[in-house]
Length: 420
Image (cartoon, rainbow, N blue to C red; front, top):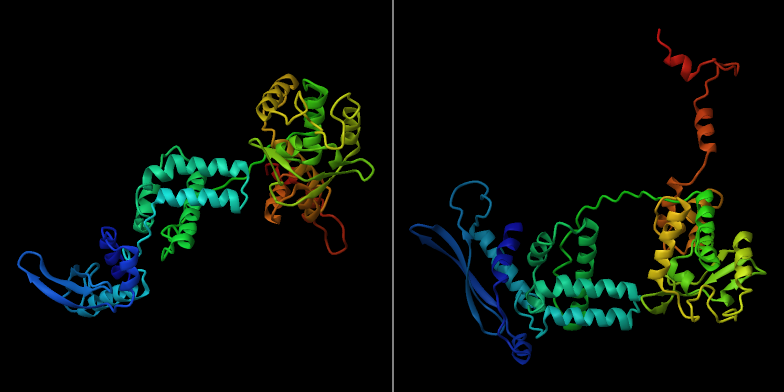
């Protein structure tokens, strides 16, 4: 059956539909028919062919493959009369179902499908500005140049696999898998809008991705050194808040004074600011994060400034009270790292610093809620980096030997390593 599917796919890529929408609609009332026959060529040898008529009245003759005339199991790529007839039945079944390549006529190109997917992502799904920026980049740089002018129904699984194999070697496996997922979304939307019989990306397997989780975080001493080296009181408060609450950079930029609940010792995360727009947090849910006394103290002092201290004002505003420039913040953060003499980590690693410290003292469910993770697996990665000095004592206790009376044998690693 694998040879049958491969054989059908080999000619279906060149099958160009000529039906209008009206003609296609009428053709559905017809019944496909056909038969197989063998032709013995002088040079090519015996070959099986199929002659059939589609529901719209068009007739075709197709070469199925070389005929197997010997005893035993047919060789790869060869057909007996039975398997040739099975090939034809598969074509007829696809024709009856309307899924035979070339029978669906959409009058839509892949560029049209990409535009519809982007519209749907932004207007109906409400994807964040960051997500939309990445999707537009994929469409502009990779999808439209490769498939833009082609009808959506003409793109096959084999086309997608060839396209992926030609992607630049400089792209990581993760990036290639991400683009494959996005292209799957383009055609999934096309299946719904233009009634494609199948999504050609669905059968393309993702590349094997060896992901090594290697978090880099700051120690408490390094966090305080970074805070002391900040260029302003506001930057110092922002760095400390990031490390002590785990808020993302966009969530810090979008934080308002009414979100800081000093009596309840909580910060409520309602929104995030990125790429010039306010959105909901990444998880899509409002969450509450503990407000440690150190953070409460620096925020209280920050609230004593002369401007921008109303309930609706931003806690960390720009010069005119508007949203902070993320790029400028990043530059000041790098300057503070250099001045403090600490290792150069991303701003986002302050969030990881919070996660690794909290997982050592709080249960994983609470840490998940504080950080706004969508699933527990994301939170579990911090377990491998949590500082737990007592674990070494537990290992030593597990390997401590005793005789029947409960007395130690007096064994030690140093004694065992001494030469005999």
